[in-house]
Image (cartoon, rainbow, N blue to C red; front, top):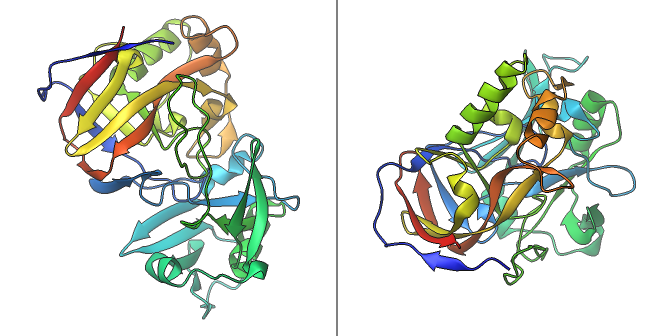
Length: 310
């Protein structure tokens, strides 16, 4: 197992947070706040909601690329899930917090009320599967289910992971297992602008189009790091929040989906990454982070590298 060496504990102005991205609904588009809180499961509310099929198995862009066109954002502690207009009566306003507008259809959920009044009756919960994990999730939004099922052209049920549901990470560097949301592997994902610039240079040399950072669905994008430097980070601090890097993120065909159109494109990003970022079984891009200490983080914050892998 790789060991860590401690770097001098002094903030650097050359490595900083370039952008933050929260995805309240797994697989859907999210939003990019300037400042956001971090708790044990990552950026607050990130991937706490998920869609499942009729068997309870999770739905992602891997099997439903159109999910990229669904958007989930949060303002004033209200989460709104929206998608392009369905063939429905756009003049109608639903009274159960689902609002149909001219250009999109949306459903709203008050997150503070949900946290304060989480149902306890067994009938409000469903047993759902994400990868090899089975957990109990809240499933009480039939109107949202109908809206999303119609848009995605498949049966979809909206579920939520309440605070009393535990799902533990399964990391590769021997760290203690941590509580995680419906994220694939870890509380947060970090990527570097330098690494994307390098990938895009390689893509263009190969005659392919450059791709935007949104293909990688990161939570924290950093600026100013040397090429592949983040591969060697073991511990880092942003403001008062502390993180531990757990492993590199293995990439799948989601990075070939145009997030603006919800359509699969060329496999060139995967093919090109395989030429220089392969562990033998898969390609990697970005780092998974575990939360050591909660706190607020903001775009522009300096990042202190506290320890590096030897």
